[in-house]
Amino acid sequence: MSTSKSKNENKNIKALFSVVCLCIISLGLIVYFSTTSNRGSENQVNEQTTLEVTTEVQNPVTIKETTTEAQTASTTKKATTKKAEPSTMEQGENNTPYKSYYKYPLGEAVVNGYSEELVYDKTMGDWRAHTAVDFTGKKGDEVVAINDGLVLDVYKDNMYSQVVVIDHGGKLVAKYYGLDSVSVKKGNYVNIGNKIGTLGKIPAEDALGTHLHLVTELDGKPVNPLDVMGKTE
Image 1 (cartoon, rainbow, N blue to C red):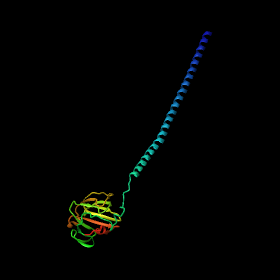
Image 2: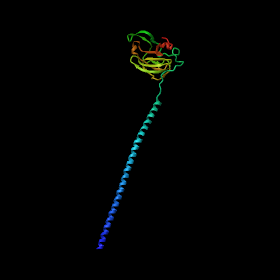
Image 3: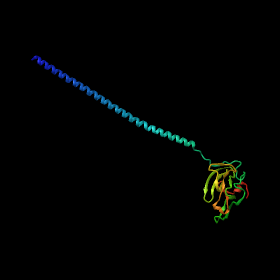
Image 4: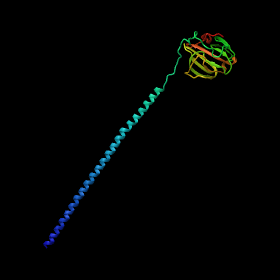
């Protein structure tokens, strides 16, 4: 009877010991997995925070710096390539109005002279001042610069065909009307006698035949081209 009782007590002690061991192991596993899970979450949070900070800080700076560098390069290029165009012709001893030598633009034959008085215009059928000199010629004849100069403008006029405007220095500007073709561009420098174009027709003065309509202005006021050049009709 005593032996049987002892055996039962031993079995109870072993069962209790097994239960305690299982509890300890379970508790250890719970602590282990809980710690591992927390560390994993912290690592994910840290990685996400680092990524967000890097994205928020680095990207705007890179874009801004790149844009600024491109704008600076563009501004520098424009400043380097921009070139001021000449606006006037310098005066020298060879281009002084009324004193220096000038060349006829087309030849010496004049079909219509300068007049500030009203004269009858056969083409337009009215009376008007003719503040120019008309040099007669044939279509295609070469028209030349009366002196050294700077081309101020080149354009087409419905009543006067192609027109070339040249600053000849000393505040003298000549306007060559009635060109069929033009050999110069705005901003070009020409020397005396250089070809500036070929002769065409002038619809506004068609009754006079093919000719060059030459206007000269001194300080913005019309003057007789022949007087300025020291020529006669």
